[in-house]
Image 1 (cartoon, helix red, strand yellow):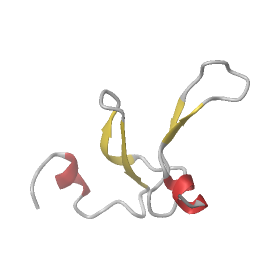
Image 2 (cartoon, helix red, strand yellow; image 1 turned 90 degrees about the horizontal axis):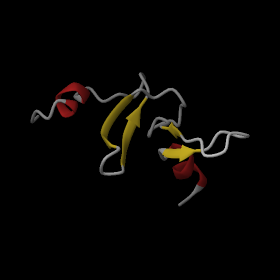
Image 3 (tube, rainbow, N blue to C red; image 1 turned 60 degrees about the vertical axis):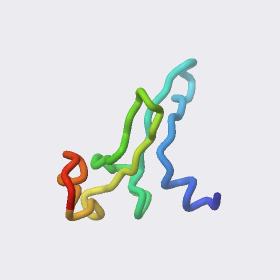
Image 4 (cartoon, one colour; image 1 turned 30 degrees about the vertical axis):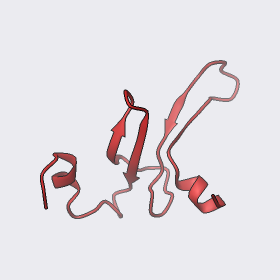
Length: 71
């Protein structure tokens, strides 16, 4: 995996100086922007990190996919 893929991959990170802390980081899968609130396929129960998008890169069919409707 190259550095660009690593930057864009969702992950849990600990907070510096806070033992046992976990923060879910989910950058945009297209540009790597840290503000990526639009996620598809995330499930904490199944430990699936999903695919995340910023406002500039959210797919046109995001809400149809999110709500489980076919194209």
